[in-house]
Image 1 (cartoon, rainbow, N blue to C red):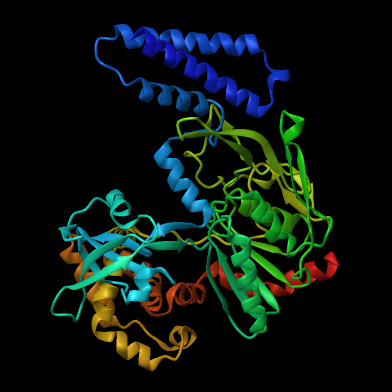
Image 2 (tube, rainbow, N blue to C red):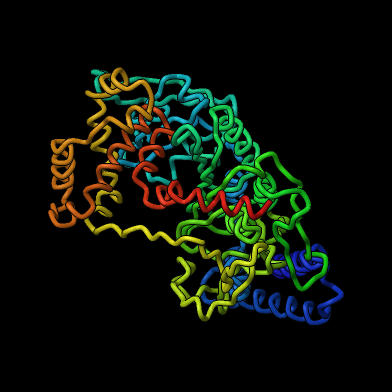
Length: 523
């Protein structure tokens, strides 16, 4: 036992010393003080291990101690265990290995929301709405959501057999799927709204985002794009270099995009644009309370240079820079080393205290009178506001949904209703509409369809609320129509339905004269 505890103490000392060396902060912090605290922790862990009334898990205690230490610093310095780190790396590397499906659990059944384009499931003909009832011959009814990736993901080249129930098929269907590398796309949709205006939705900043972004811009340009709406709403951020490259496409060479400042000079950096081919394209950027970090870097640079118009709601306010340090056991810590500032000097980070946000753990920035926000000047002399996050040039707030509609979405009832509807109507819709733009313009959700949805909801113990239903009627219609479009045309079709009824997007379309004026003054 003594030898085991001795090893633990030495391991903790080596771990902390390694982090300190990696951060290069020996010159600014007392080695004696750090060593004393490491020794103190080792003493406590050893005493608890030897004398505590019950058997303890020393690894769990150590991880809890590390997490507790980091939560006292700021909201984004965190400990990541081995399993979490694997998932995080997959998300930002832009790919994983598996069968290539988006899924959900509907009525205890593993249901395909969408096969991922180009993945092995799509190639075999697996469809949205298919229900997987067996995996390798074993029933997966009532499978916990967190267990699905364990069953379906695996090394490229390995095989898995799934048994599927499909509407219209009298017998179960079996598919043997060879797992492959599956791309995780960060450009969710790109299409032409009309003959001039392109729309491009970016959902995060992963290692492949800029390449995807450039391909989408080339596609739109080939279709005649002369103006662009860049949708960064609910984009939580990601890699700084990807945001820098994206902003560079719109901001001329040499102009500052973002800079960082920290306690250690080694973490002070300035990122100047490398220039791009879209510096003359009128631009509107959509943001909301879910737009954070890298999204705010792009929006802040566009706004500070008067390069384009920012529309929507105030952004999240995540302007802390983390460096990740991998630990010897396969886990990692992310430690905040500096802060992001926009070209005009605005700090992106919103206030926090004792490692936590004061406003409901990081929800949208509360509305604060502009008179108490610090004021900065754009390149053209306009007033813009600091205090955390990016305040749009034009604020458009979306209506909140009623509890009835929230229940419909939470229980996936709109998805379930639409999939049942598509069992008999898919061929009719595919034959009637040549593309999703035809569908957007001409398809109508009927009263019978709405009654069918409300009847399904009632059968799932969601009592019909006529007042709430009528208030959200337009939104519910859009949800149904969007799901139908996604089943046939994927994300481009789904987003096209939403955009044609989206108040923030429609405001962007009507505000391009102002964006053009900004561009002319910017030149």
